[in-house]
Length: 95
Image (cartoon, one colour):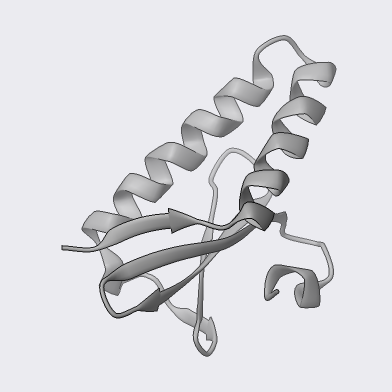
């Protein structure tokens, strides 16, 4: 069984994006968070489905929002490294 861990950087990413979307439209940030949470649950259940983009980083694109969840797998942990806009500098995704 894998344990999901979210880094401080990824939590900060999420907080900024949620705030930004909520300023654009009421509750849109919460819709974004719900999609992220659904994807995180899916990742835990289906680890092998997602490609390694740049070893050892896996990427999962969101469907409704133009964002990517980046994570690594170490032993029995899934460590979410970032939640970034797909067009952002890739170096930021892999910190």
